[in-house]
Length: 501
Image (cartoon, rainbow, N blue to C red; front, side, top):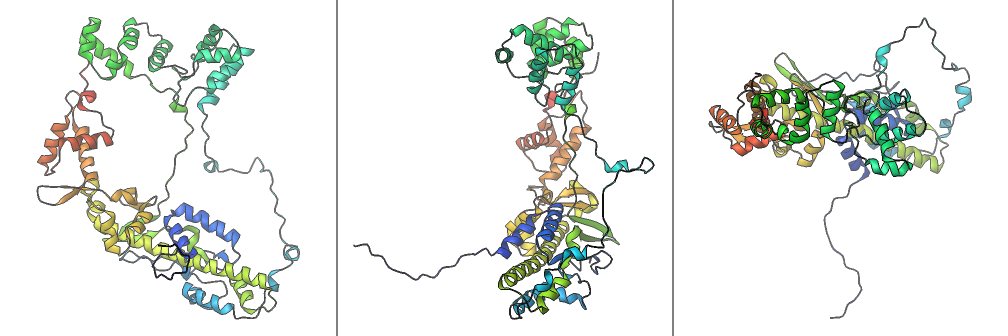
């Protein structure tokens, strides 16, 4: 059969992502702080967008028992506008089509800004006088890094000359935990000096604060700390050098037999060593605390739960009435100006509409989640129910991907604390009554059981399984072990400690 080239007509269906749909999806993924940043960026780029003063805005969030608040970004009134309905996104979209039929006009936008700002106040920055009181709560303390802390001590040490450069090189190769893993032989070759000279500089640095710094392994780190405390018990040093791994696994009986000593002596030495810092550099970390701004707030008022959305500046976003008036009434607009103005105007309308859509979507999904987890709100984490994306998607009649976008990276403030929305989704375990319980509530029970145990006789995984079964939870021992590992709880053998002799 010969190959021929021709045109074929075929009917097919496919989803075309319009810019408006892409923007709607993007806004849905943003949390409160990211939406705030996007709003500020859009106002810089689009002259049709502005923020209404809080006193001018008629959008006072009045929550309803159903969970959806009235008002929103798209229903904000404009300054000097006769009616709030003028800013309805649907009306704005229809009006944008009518604007194309209006005579070309846009000349009044090109104002003489020098005349406008001629009488404006000349704002300058000035040095505060000594008598002016400052609010020191505005300042965030900046932690000193481990590298800076060591370099300061190096400058005050007795070494000088090339040894200073070697010391700076050594400090630069110390990791955040305080360990030096760079071979000293390579450093000696780098500076063309004897290995003994590098070792002497390292010995000086190992005497710096914090104790145990610049160690090349855990054993050396522990020895340095004992030396700094003037500990002269040779048994401790020998235990660290010869039996550190067995000591970590609490093999006291085997260690005592190998060292030909009493087991109680080994256990007492273990308690002494366990008080040392295995990562001396971590107290100088510069990681700043990450503060969470909840996207939704759930409050209980008069035995009803109400839902508030943290909208930030987007709650007061509106169309600038002055620019819209120019766009409607001027008659000296070039073709390029018309294209630019209409593009920015439609962009502003669609942004308001998509922000309002985002608000309603988040509130609906949050309401569905909280309704499913009502027992959690009333009684705590132990009463958290199993919940899946499909359950919520069916409840709000949306796709699972939409629910996933809303619940990822967004937080809700509840009477029980602040949680990420996806925290409320978990698998379930069957109980004796035939009902399901959340895996998170089971983990909470495991934590409670471990906290109630005695250190001399901790509960094994099998014992925890039996205790959960008494509470009506059907669970396998291997599942308990998996949950325990996820909770970073050590096995019973490593949690066990004998009484001090």
